[in-house]
Amino acid sequence: MNKRFYSYNEFLKDLDILEEKIKEFNPSSFIAIARGGMSIAHFLAERMDIREVYMINSISYKNEKKLSSPKISNIPNLNGQKKVLIIDDISDSGETLKKVLEILKKTYPKIEFKTLTLFFKENSKLIPDIKLHKTNEWIVFFWDKEGQRRIDDLSSNQ
Image (cartoon, rainbow, N blue to C red; front, side, top):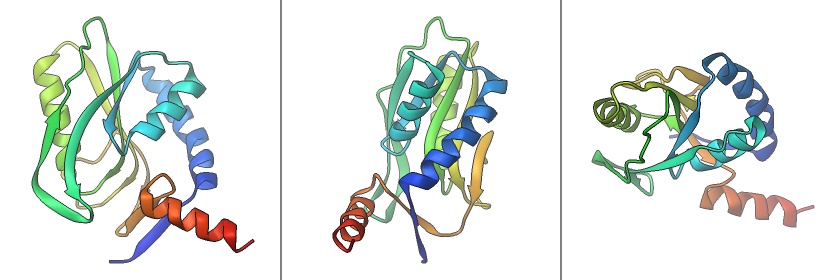
C-alpha cells in the first residue's frame, strides 16, 4: 500500500477549511477519538474557543494491522450538551466512527452528533459529515511516530 506523508503545513491549511465547515453546525463540544482525533480536536478547539473537549478511546489497529473490531471505552459524560462533533483523523473502514456514533446516540439520544475526519476512504462504512480528502493511501500524519521520524530526517538534511 502506498504511503502519503501529511505535513504540519498541510494540517494548518486544512484547519482553516475545517473551521469554516464546522461553523455551520455550531457544536457546543468536541469529542476526539483517541488517538487520531486528539491533535485535530485540540487545534480546532483553540481556534474556535470551544472549552468542552472530551475524549473517547478506540483501538482499531495494532501498528498497521487491523483488529477484528474496534474496542471502545471511556464514554464521556455529555449531559447538558446539544450538538457534539466527533473528530478523528481518518475514516478508513469506517467501523470506528460507526461504532462510536452508535454508542453515543444510544447513550445520549437527545444530542445531535456529527462526524469529522481529515481523510476518508470511498469504501468506508461511514462517510463523515465533514471531511476533506478522499484517499486510498496509508496516511502517515506528522504527529505519528513514523511521521515524527520523517520530520527529524528532513530537518537533519537541511
